[in-house]
Image (cartoon, rainbow, N blue to C red; front, top):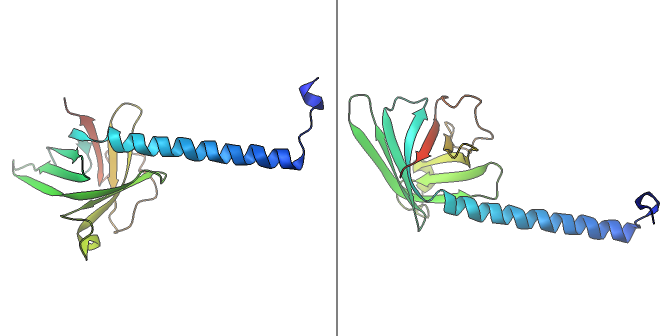
Length: 153
């Protein structure tokens, strides 16, 4: 029997469409679980469009982080708290909270970001300047509020 002569009726097409949607959702969930595991650990700041000379971010089990920033005058600042990751969004959304994300008013002290693991093994985080999640990454890795990290050994 030739494939070109094979006809799939309406119920068959609905089954194929339903299975396709299920498979896409399944693989999207697997990807979401992977990114949650893959960001854990310490990352060194490689580049940013902001006025920092170095730094690192450390994602810990239990949804907490520590972000250390180094300034041109050799001073340092560290931000710590909880984070919320929505890996099911495209791009993935990350909320970095000062302290506990469930505290009333924490949205006023949070950074709203998008993140991705780039093909070159780098972690890219783009922070909003408006208090909303950015819709997309800038073209330039050195844009303001764009952070590129490499895994620290």
